[in-house]
Image (cartoon, rainbow, N blue to C red; front, side):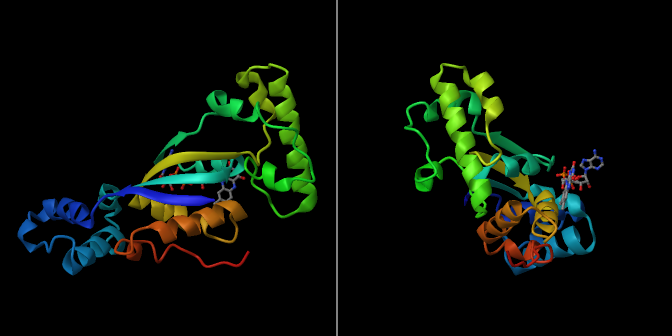
Length: 207
Ligand SMILES: Cc1cc2nc3c(=O)[nH]c(=O)nc-3n(C[C@H](O)[C@H](O)[C@H](O)COP(=O)(O)OP(=O)(O)OC[C@H]3O[C@@H](n4cnc5c(N)ncnc54)[C@H](O)[C@@H]3O)c2cc1C
């Protein structure tokens, strides 16, 4: 799994949005300590949380499973542009047979769980999919035998309010291990000067 932050809104944009309410623009220190404290006080402590929606983050998420994708997509307050299996499954067509002896090659396409039996069944499913594609069946139909472990990638744009909710729910030990990994990696990718807004939401965990 790889998480890259492509873009984020500077804190001063959110502070300026908050200052609109009181027309106190002259008190801004351009995203410095005063603005940071204001965002925390109004957005978090006063629960005027809609102001946090002015902070937006765009991440590129790679090598996550489609099992994780369907959980991530439940977070409605975010925007997703996902690698399309309909357009990209041809990547498998030119591959040689996937065998249990060569897990490394299959890992290019699959997220492994570390449970031998599950991972071997995933490789068999991948090989089945390859055979379906080699038989000339269109991606549109072939995709129905994709294993949930099949890797995907996406651009994910989310605002700070929704990201707090995501990190709180998905770093919890009750969440699926892979989305917990994602929540932790996303947290660690948030710019350092923004991270204080999420500290109360991240939960530590052991695998
Ligand atoms: C441990 C765990 C187990 C889960 N198990 C299941 C499961 O078995 N089956 C299943 O279907 N899902 C399951 N989910 C998914 C869960 O039900 C949510 O769909 C998911 O966590 C997204 O949360 P959310 O709605 O808060 O986020 P978002 O959709 O991003 O919404 C953010 C916030 O906006 C507000 N909001 C959004 N839409 C509405 C609305 N229509 N009405 C009112 N307020 C709204 C709410 O305050 C919400 O918290 C599970 C989630 C977790 C964390």
